[in-house]
Structure formats: structure tokens, C-alpha cells
Image (tube, rainbow, N blue to C red; front, side, top):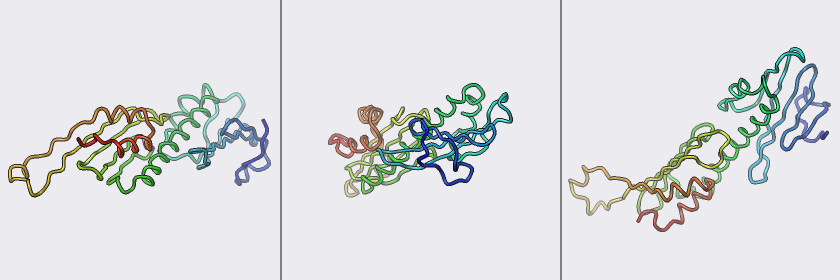
Length: 214
């Protein structure tokens, strides 16, 4: 379906025939070249727009990625190697999945910082947000949370680890207790819950779970 909306300002994309497929806009460029515009969203609101240009020296040769604006830490080259030579449509669609899932994970982290910034102490994440770790301090114990996404297209954690570290009152700590290292408790029920919830929902669950430190 031809749609000239949201044409990027780059001159090579202007005045080109375009085809919209869901959140992708495909441009027919000069020669054996195709431009793809990826539109990303979170909670119905638009986020970044990314571009990728595919080119072939002739219609008989396989296409290659000549330029793109995708984040450098996403495996665009690996996806190209795996899919583009055999199935260009699969390559285009898989890149869309990876980009949108990355945006989902990133925005989930932004949202928990916005909603629970007072409760979250330290927060760490990898560049593609496939590893997220944070600490909850507004409890009678210290709770550390570590979640992992085993695939770049996942938006729910595949692994979760929640540990509750006891806090001891300084008035009652003996010299022997000071030398002893506190032993954390692993909260398996919280880990199971986190693997079925988005990160904001999981953070809400942790912040309102009365037995978290019991």
C-alpha cells in the first residue's frame, strides 16, 4: 500500500515510491537499492526511527547492507549474514523484531526509574538491556534483583534472581557478628513472578509484596 507519510528528510529518500507494512516503510531507491524505515513504539507512543539501505550490484547478486542507523551493539551484521542472502523479507522482519524489543526493554527500565526512583538504589544494564540488575533499599532488608533475556527479541525475562540481604541493627551487633558475612535468602517465588511480568509490573509486585523480607 503506497503511503508517502513520514518520509525521512534525507535527500535520497525524498520523492520515492514507498510501501508501508505495519511499522516499516520500504523505499524504492535508484538502482538495485532498497531503503527501509523502522518506526518503533512504546505503550502506543512513537520512539526512534531507524533506517537501513540494502543494495545489490545487479539483480542477479545478493543484497548487502550498505548503511544503517541501527544501534552499534545490536547484531545487524550477524542477522545480515544469517538471513539476507537467502531471505530478504526474513532479514527485514527480524531486524524489526530486534529493534522493537530493544526499545521495549529500554523503555521498561526508564519507566521503573521514573516510577520507583526513590526505592531503587543502584541500577546496571547492558547496552542492549539483555541484563538488568538493581537494588531495592526501602525495606527491612536489602533486595537485589538480576534479570536476563536470553534472546534479543524477548521482552519478558527468561531468567531472574532475587536475593534478600538481612540488615542488622548496629546496637545489637557483637564483634563476632561484625566479622561474619550476612547470608542472603533466595526468593524463588519472586523470581517466578518476575519471569511472567514486564519489568514495571514486576517492580510493582516487589514493592508491594508484604512477605519480601520476612
